[in-house]
Image: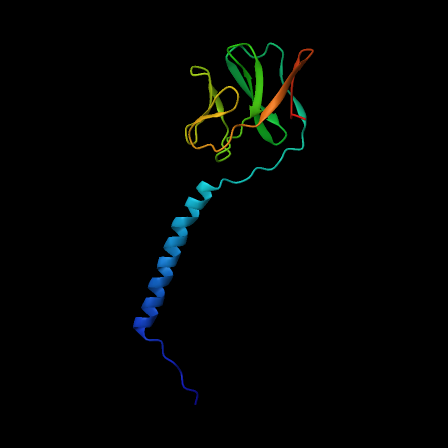
Length: 147
């Protein structure tokens, strides 16, 4: 007969406890790491789109538009300039919006704010918003990626 090693109850419970601690550690650490390293976005293959018609946006207003498979935001600033940015927050890829009272671009996910040049003012976003070029061609506002 072949001798069998019997696993004692105490050794079995020690293995079970150690496994539970490792699982708890992993379940706690994983969300923290996902928060610290946000996912990378997929590049859009579109190079330019018609975002609006001329005169469609009032001063100190904004419009969300589609730029390929991602949203963009077109701003008509209080100074009368037209500016466009990617509407995807650089923190966790939430869609940003324009706060006309404060004249800032705001991400509601974690209260990140950007100025009218797309630069980070406050909050967790690690980088500025991607800026697009804006051209008015006839009665269309055309937004394109910088060359």
